[in-house]
Structures are given as C-alpha cells and as structure tokens.
Amino acid sequence: MLKQPFAQRASVEGVAIYLGQQLDLRRFSHDTVLATAPLTVTAGVEGIAVLFRYGVVVLFGMQPVEVVRFTTDIGELVSEPFDEPEQESFEIRFNPDKPEGIDQGRIRLRTSSLQGLLIVADVLAKSTVLAHYEVELREHFDRIEPLARSLQAGRIGTPRGKSLLRHIGENLMIEARMTGRIEVSEKPEQIWDYPEFERLYLRMEDEFELVERHAAIDRKLGLISKTAQTLLDLLHNSRSLRVEWYIVILIVMEIVISIGEKIF
Image: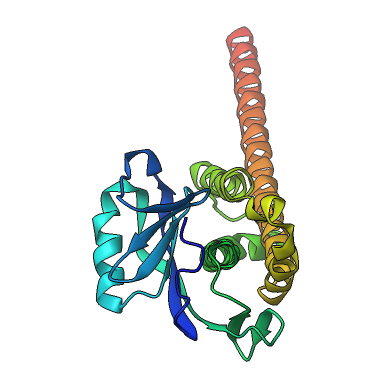
C-alpha cells in the first residue's frame, strides 16, 4: 500500500462526483489497487481515485481532462447514471504544524497519508449524495405543494392515484438508498483500524453538517410522504362515497320502477 501518495506536494485538489445510483465494482479491474474498502486505485498521471458502490467517485490530484477520461471509462459500470451528476470540488493542504480540520474552505491535513485521504473521501462522497437529494427533494416539494394548498383551501382537487403512489414510492426509494447503501450516519471502516483519524472525521462531519442535513432530508421525506398519503386516503374516501351514492341511486330507481309497475 502506498502510505503517502502526495508526499512531495504541499496541496492537492480534487472532486467528488455522484455518477449514478450504483457502481458495479465487481466488473472493475485495475493494475494498482491501494485499498479495497473503499476501492482505491491510482488514476491519471499521479492521481488517486476512490470508488464507492453507491455511485460516487472521489478523485485526488487529477487534471480536468483526466477526470473526464476516468469517469467516461467507468461509465459502463454505473447503474441509472444521472444526466447532470452532482459534484463538489475541494482543496487539501498538508501542514504538519497545524491541527487537521477545515480552514477558510480548505481541508487541512498533517500529512498526505492514504488513511487520511480515505476519511476525506468518505465525508465528501456523503456530502455529494446529500446535495443531490437536497435538490431532488426541492423538486418533489414543488410538485406536492399545489396539492397541499388544495387541502388548505378545503378541497381535494384532482390528484391522480398513480401520481400520489409514485410520490410515496420515490420517497421510500430515497430513504432506502440513503439508509441501506450510503449509510450517511455510519462512520467509515478506516476509523476502526486507525482510531487516530476519528477526530478528523468528526471535525469534517461537523463542518459539512452531515448529521443535520441527513436529518433535514428525513423530515422532508416524512412530510412529503404524509401529504401524499393523506391525499391518497382522501381520494379513496371520495371514490368510496361516490360509489355509495351510485348504489343508493340504483336502489331508489329500482324502488320507483317497482312502485310504477304496481300502480300501472
């Protein structure tokens, strides 16, 4: 394992890209593997790529043309790729005389150890996923808001059952992906093997507000699901009431016809 990939550099730039819903790493092969959890390989002239199964790649020390080439090469491994992938650029500065953390928007590490870079990659990958779903949920709110306003005005409106079910299904899928695949609230495996990096992770987790953003997304998911479920229940009740009226009308018509037959 390469312990200090950028030992001769004072800083390194990188980018985290959320390519799609999943990366099939079983089909990925590479000559130089630096770590397996998460999969970390050399890339470009002197860069490093960290690949996460939930669809994010974090690239360190690569030129823009190398980034494009690498993401294009692994494109066939991406399930449900996004038309406009979410990405976050960053800069890391190495300074053995200062504590690790965030300084004026830049990430500061004491050394360029691979373990430290993997901690950074884990936080940035999760932050990129959260940014993606924050945008997606804003779009969901835009679609669900008119329906909520119709409830506020005392009318059900004309929502379609399939549309409401789609809202509920999409929310469940987002929740399943964030909890099952991405595990935003879980600490990276490196901390268990290298506990000295736990402070770095906690500082970055706090700086990027992973816990708070995850909680905010959960609240939004709950609100959207509750609104859609309420409208779906009202729609079912409305249809049930309509059917009951149809039955009443049919019974009345049958009674009228029976009385008419007796009279005439």
